[in-house]
Length: 187
Image: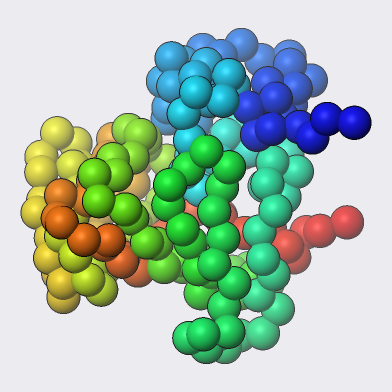
């Protein structure tokens, strides 16, 4: 028995929704070429891109990849589960819980040296605080260099991406109003 890779799941759910790559790209704020590469497992997909894709396809995030649960409102260093998304070099730690009516979602991201995300736009707002390292956020074509202790807050409907431009792993706290976790709607 073969294990479905994330690309095969993306393609299967897109076809089940009777949508073209261009339709999903338009609805998710991604490019059709990026989605095509993702479906062929040629590129990794970030958590925010997966959230946009799952919304476009009308499927919960947990059918695309497994995320650790965070049932309690508190989370403690050393006790959180670090996780990755297949093919993606980022490591995540979930910081927020899910409950009906929740408006914000938070993760701590560890970005390797040289990492650059895909270009995306999505609903809501995004806030990032650099815990360590040096990154550059590009928002609507403008670059914002950020180092430890710096932050950025912007309309996530504007095309954006980020990159680790330093010589060490960058750690970033990211908070977004976009739904990243859907465990309150689990089966």
